[in-house]
Length: 127
Image 1 (tube, rainbow, N blue to C red):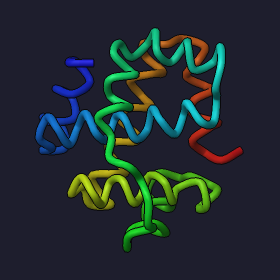
Image 2 (spheres, rainbow, N blue to C red):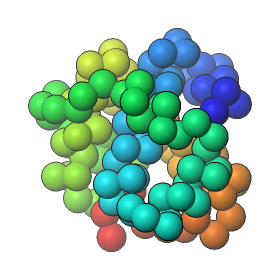
Image 3 (cartoon, rainbow, N blue to C red):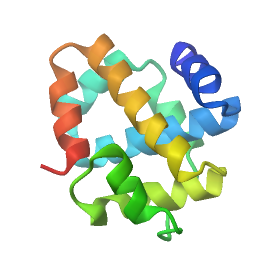
């Protein structure tokens, strides 16, 4: 987890709390989408995933970034983004940085998680 937090703070200029909360939002989204054995593989790739999910703000509200966030990260189903956009807004993460955060977390899971990377990418694309 610390490695991913450091990547986000240096790459995107987030503070550690924003990074951990943002990771938690993405992981919470994946937990809801994947569930079970697939999410267990994500947890293997991202140590302390549960603590990051616990650190995420309660997502809600669309914020002003929903549509452009969907475009930024290539996600298909805008409805699924509602929970993420509201949480990023509460963390003070703008749409540009939110897009970078989602991409960085996805790449991290793909690099660390082997075959789960493709499943995560598919879940985030809304397919």
